[in-house]
Image (cartoon, rainbow, N blue to C red; front, side, top):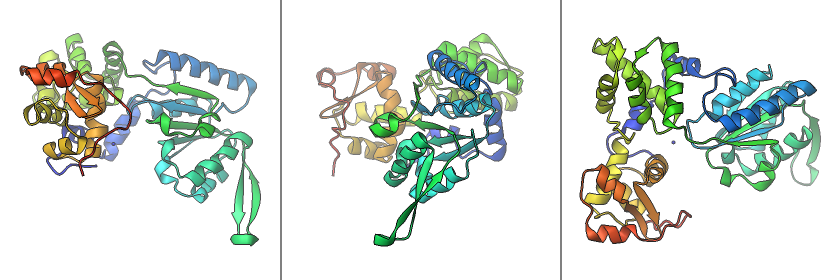
Length: 360
């Protein structure tokens, strides 16, 4: 989740490469079973039924595909699946599997009933993908020995296992791979009320005292994402500790998050820089992605993958066939008056396909 050439934006400051104790803390905050998992009610109920039926049959659970934006609980659900099935868990990722041999080595070492979690499964290489088809369906892989005309395929039987795939871009998965998953769940962004429940659970585990208004303040700035909510909670905890606050109320939470440049709608420095550049330098657009990225000192990929999804979801930024535009809500959020020509730009037709005019 390219890097910019300017100062690091708060998403990076709030989510650095975690130290060992930070990773341990994140792991401790993860729910261990479906009963403790907050939110995603529909997916949780469906998954509970799939796992219960598998336990009754005494067989490995069907392969599971989890899709949705980052930070909503795909990895946590994979861990819960392994725990609910009382099975060991093996974790890898699509980018780490660039050759069929990489996947063969993982599959051949699995034990019966083991859960294999592949994060960002859409980023696997094509040869590995094709090997996975047979492994998922027939629990068998063909190991190629030799080269050229003398090459032979040696079938290798695999013990029954459960594959849990996670992807942030389900549309990039080929149909044959999607069809081999017995259960597919799409995770949605959390409501503010659900985020508050996540925060209350985490605060209890961290032994923090927060008022209801304190929980609401953090939840409102968490972008509907539990991972962000827990990180903001830890940063507020640090601020309160340094300032000698025993109880975190709305004012304390607001002061802490303001210091970390997370505003009342959850926008961070990069988000606001994109909007400000759009309205102040380009009069609300339309403007190409590359030009906009240069204006804020970031790589186009950073603007497109880190800032844009949230800004579009909040109705602050629009993607049109001619480029990005600032929506009326963006001008309002920045406390600026929307000029007449920007209103005309906001009326341009939208197109969320990969149309992007990239400046060369």
